Amino acid sequence: MSEIILKTMLRLTAKTDVGKVREHNEDNYVVCPDVSKNEWFFSDVTIEPEEGTLLVIADGMGGLNAGEIASAIAIETVQDYFRNAERKKLETNEHVKEALIECINNAQVSMLAHAKEHPETSGMGTTIVIAFIKDNILHTAWVGDSRCYVFRNNSDLYYATKDHSYVQELVDAGKITMQQAFYHPENNIITRSLGDNSNKTPKPDFCAYPLESGDKIILCSDGLSGMLQDEAILNVLCNTSNINETASSLVQAANEAGGHDNITLILTEILTVSNKPFSESFKLKKMPLACSYKQMDSGNPFQTLKPASVTESERGNENQPTVGPVQKKRKLFTIISLIVLPLLIITFILLKRYDNKKEVTDPQVKDTSSLIKIIKKRGAVSLDTSLNDTMYNTNKFRSYNQQVKVKTSGNFNKTTINRKTKEESLRVEQQAVIKGITDIKSNSDSIKVSN
Image (tube, rainbow, N blue to C red):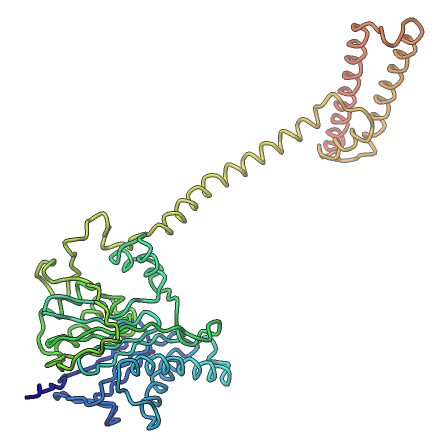
């Protein structure tokens, strides 16, 4: 007697909301309950897909540069791909993988072509996440930070995707935790997207996971996952039973948390799962656990809860963004700069003043040109008025110096000049120069007074 092959049965719903801050909705989504029927709508009825169920969300970016156009192009490209009668039949898991990656790459080509024809939309972009449910396997392909979760055993929430984001790279490197990533000031930076001119091939990631009866699959934009931590999402799932109620409660919770972005989600409940055997050639991965209800305290489903495995030092202050290592270095650099820079400026000013003072009082001035420079720095009113006195004192100094030289050359050998005579000569030279500077200043001050 041959074994009866059961079909997968499911029910689904979807919701989108503009949020509380944005003026328009840049998210787009589409659902095809059964791609064999090519019907792109759904109703609250039980579905038995023959070829598979397709779920897609795109989160547009670009604001004035048409983020909503970018997400619409991505959705329409996926629809066109699966509507095409000539596409490959999705008979095997490998076919599904090839189809999902190909339609994402096609969306990239379509967006670049549109931006070229319409320069006003240059810079637009979008994330995309696709879930394809076939028999007892969930296939996911994505680019960006729109997510797919799996809720299992009415207690555990799993990641079916991994964000292409800066903070996710920090988490992977062990520099911050997922809880810290949620509060990180740069958690909105994504590392892959559709529409990026610098990256002709977006490099979508792909994973496949086995499904179980009772699983709930949640696709969402970061308007949900960016406003609610995984624990809060899990708490809503655990405290609601009907998928329509669950979807509405999640949107409400995201808005109550601030509603800073557009909120879009598709929720699918697996009622029964096919018992078709898995293909041995196709590798299925184990989903990483996001959080478990067993680790949490029961309470308000809209309350952000702490998993028991997370310490207070890891989490930090929930009311303030947790600062990661990069921000700590930047903060330290800023503090050092604020201290060192004023000190450098003060030091420079003091050295400048010292140099000016030294130049004015330096007894080693040797000629008229040096005295003229000093007069200019001291702010003499009339250089000509002071120049006569300067020449007189300088000539006096030179005349005396020549007398000393004549005297020493007539009575002594140059190599045996008396040290006392040298010191006396130097003292007289210094006095002559200082007197010249003093007379110049006196003349300058007299001119200012008379004026």
